[in-house]
Image 1 (cartoon, rainbow, N blue to C red):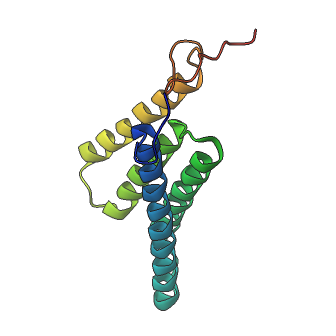
Image 2: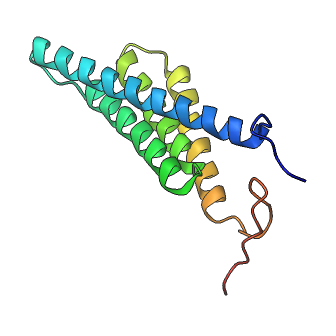
Length: 139
């Protein structure tokens, strides 16, 4: 069957939109990073929460870079970002926070860390990713 120039491949459209959105996220992340650096410069004080926020921005950019290089986003990258974000939240709440809230947030970090371990050591031949062939594990 011959394709005409008016036929649109839905998969290609979704991929194109995905790349545009990721590029937008990258640009906005760079803008947010610059704004944070300017704020730190104006205040003339660097706090741990500021460093963690910059680390989150760096991880987001890294995740986008990995996607453009491999067309995949490893699930561990968003999990690392989540752990950093919860750590930043704990730091921002300060010493006056309720101990039970601190335990819940620390428990959330532990659960995410365990999820990273599970994902890291899962069998690689158990599923198919976006129509790609199943990768057999080398023993």
